[in-house]
Image (cartoon, rainbow, N blue to C red; front, side, top):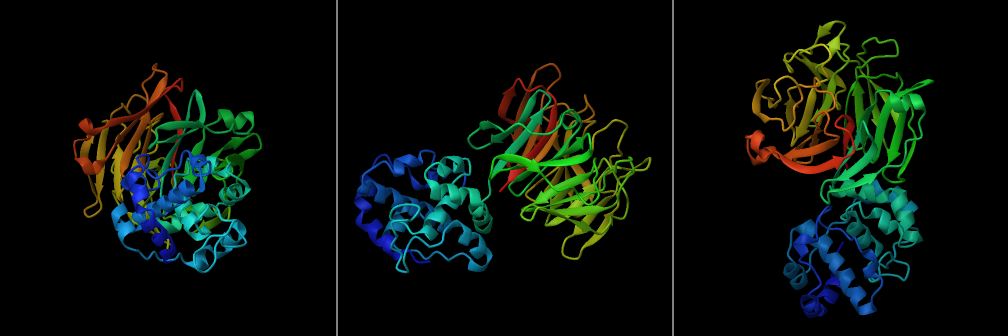
Length: 453
């Protein structure tokens, strides 16, 4: 896609752009989380000339992000931006708009999303906008509302490699809430429309694609509820082919895998299933080598792993690796040489930049896994004590390039979100920083999931 028409206009308006002191520097405007339009109405409640300038600035944002250019680079020379693969997005795009909003020469029609821009360019721009602004965008007009509710932008973001991380949290005195780690803002989710049994029973959670899955038991048996980021509503999720609890799980893009666990009679399982969030279906996978429950799962280097747990009365130190391409499991001996103790929670593990970390529930240490020689080494200490409750009530997650620890101390009545970037150094004890404090939540974290989309 060549934006020659827009570059000609940009050059003619170059002096106006530079004289406008209200326009922030481009580097602060680009990126999914840094490039936001919190006050989009200002783009429409202005005169035509100012509206055109704003639209051209939006074009700069996309081009600078894709090509790593400065504003002068964009204004002084044109840049070719490759068109998206039409095959992957054609069906979804057809449901968004029946026409492009512009002709073959790049001139926009009166029915385009933004004045002065064709729809292809506008969709690229909106894909780089933080999805915290999407509810506001949906209020602009019916066309924007249809676009946001279609889910097309999330597919486009995935295709462009745009990823944001939000933290979903449920504490003992707090219903489900979402936390934006960039803006450091909290958002309460709608009340989960489950029965009393589901509310009071233990639950497990998993974020996959644009969905938050919550697993638990209702009076009638196992149940799964899902919260949609697109609709901002709860609905029932189809049950697994073999319902279970106490399983290992993790997600990768729009898919998730659950493995092992316990059936309704308490028997350990070695079966596994894959969930496709876009299709809303569960698919059986080959069985693991050993049944295990109270285990943990994670994705690393494109493969799914399960470690820890128990098989019968035996505490397992081996792990298993599932290759999605070959559909085979590989046993890894002594992958987690920390035998599970009575009343201890499943392994607290997290992956950051394809490196595996674990929080030791007995020593309060953070350890890093060496994939080459299958060993663990201490890289720091936890900012909170995990040994007081055998690891329960504490969340240990990967969030982008950071490790996240969420929890509190008994009697304090609030939870603290700590983060640490492992690439900043190996002294974890002094590198932990406070991301946020949530008061009146209770110190016990019931569920925590990180959504990346």
